[in-house]
Amino acid sequence: MATVLAIPAMKDLKVKYLDSILVSPSPMTEKRSLFLSNIDQILNYNIPTVHFFRANQDFPPEVAAKRLRIALEKVLVAYDFMAGRFKLNHQSGRLEIECNAAGAGFVVASSEYSLEDLGDFVYPNLGFRQLAVQILDTLGPENDQPLCVFQITSFKCGGFAIGMSMNHVLFDGIGAQTFMENLATQAFDDKPLSIIPSHNRHILAARSPPQVTSPHPEFFKPDIQPVSGPPVFDCKKEDLDYKIFKFTTKSIDNLKEKARSTETTTRISSLTVVAALIWRCKALSLPYDENRVSTLLNVIDIRSRLDPPLPNSFCGNAVLVSYSSAKCGDIEEGQFCNLAEMVAVGPKRVTDEYARSVIDWLEVNKGLPCGEYMVSSWLRLRFDEVVYPWGQPVYSGPVVSHRKDICWVFADVDGIYALVSLPVEEMERFESHFHKFFE
Image (cartoon, rainbow, N blue to C red; front, top):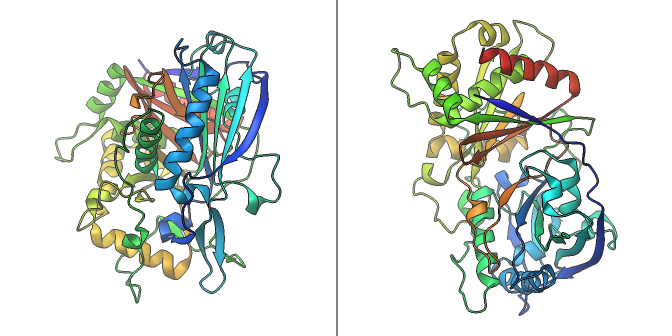
């Protein structure tokens, strides 16, 4: 059956920060400016993750920390933009990355606890924020801060965690997966990069002149355009409740059975039914209005949807959102198969021409995603399969943040997890609808 994992009491991991430095490419790289696509431009926010490792007698935390720092120096030669800083091109109003070798953040820390004290790693533990700091207090203004910070935290048991806080502008999930594989190779003595990254983000540049050939209700143009630079896709910080909704293999099969319809041949995947139920619970978690239209945004990879497809080595952001919209009354009273069908059909719209039209729309309107809730799937990302000299992570996953507009979906050995972050009253209604659906 589907279950809910609530947040545990532990919020302070008693972390002591021992060292905080900047790591630059070695050997040094040449200065250059990196073009950022319109997709990159709207993803200016941090994604923190944490990766836990059991004790390895050949690689105690201090040895792993040294290896990780050296690996970072080496891998930043191929990923020079990660050691750069944002620069606003005042002529175009666009963000660029100045690849100036200013450095990525590197933090060494220790906790008074052992890994066993933390319990189940999948819990959305607020204390995990201490394992992936996002800024370096030793630095000055925001424009001096690194675009990514790596942190290694040792535990009393000899195990350790590697936290990574990366600005989404750097790359999407698949790009991050490739980077981590490359980082791991450089922690060995004699391994080459697993794949040479492609920095050509001009592949996703707008056409000249822009050609908006489709309506794009999944985006909106802000009433007030920013004075300089692109608009920021973010939400205000407020007190949130965090819970993991676990879909077992059995509950997913149950959802697929409910989603079956004799009137369609559309393939209904596990992600489709999970996203459909998450959408239903989220739409009904707000004060009820049967005529209110709720829109779900589903993050999709466009690499294989373009013509020609993007190279596997592409390391920018190649993601867009598909949309599904319905009135809350229809969401509550309608059949689940109709909801699943809407979620499944959304990505089918995103062809090569549609994606190019989105990029051109963003060029003209400087807009942002427009939806009530967004589902971002990590099901294809294999962060826990990356092999370091000290082994594979026993758990890899997202760290809770202030984002109440995004649901992170990631894999479990016997099902799927959904990390939901909502204000308390909304969470109570969300959880109530979740449980009732399975009764």
